[in-house]
Image (cartoon, rainbow, N blue to C red; front, side, top):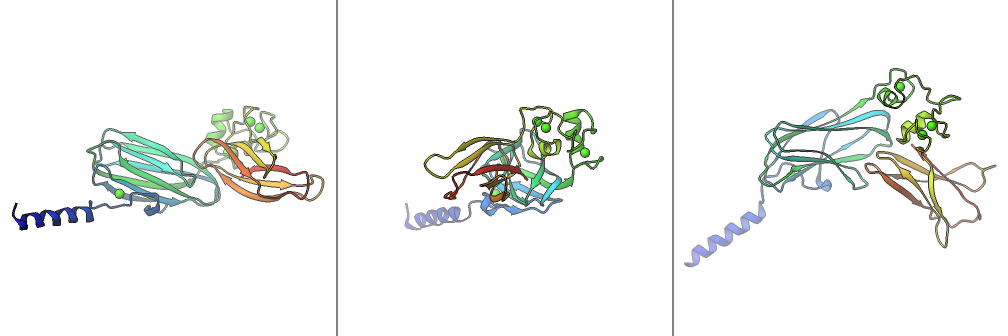
Length: 266
Ligand SMILES: [Ca+2]
Ligand SMILES: [Ca+2]
Ligand SMILES: [Ca+2]
Ligand SMILES: [Ca+2]
């Protein structure tokens, strides 16, 4: 091979590594594209290993439903996922044809939080366009009791049950209907309610654990005397998009031999 032919090969290799492909949106959550509530974004999967990440901020809310919609344009074979700061990815949808819409919605309760959405080809040789839309809408609550009417009808068959008060605990499990709505537990099942399921205090910091529902925030509070003094805030724990047990490790070295804990769903 002549020397100048070898040189041109080296130059080609360098330029290929410097410009992999013309990517419109970042490939990780850390460099995701912010999306404003109520807006649409048009994206493109340029090569089959491309993925595009978006982020959006929820409002502080007890009465909003977040709706994420990913619709394929010319992209064939796509997957979309929702990720929250706890790092767990929930699959929004996959499809193997064009012009399919994947939609996920949930009621956001608690402080503002950043969510992430990942869009990618589902298999090799899939490129093309898609749109992503993020909306936040008040859920329907015609009887103004703070509980989504759709949830009430799904649970009770109507919207007649009171949120709280003397007859506001339908299943008599000690948790008001509205607290079960906010905690994501079943108001018609006495075995389903927010409760501490584990407590340990052996040789080190004590820890408290409970069964968590998705998209919820929990405050952990402590008291050293239930008769006087009230409750002190310890910390907030979240389990945004996965089921499972949450745990809080109390770093406090106790000065009192007795510490009471309680967990509240925000
Ligand atoms: Ca990308
Ligand atoms: Ca209602
Ligand atoms: Ca109840
Ligand atoms: Ca219940």
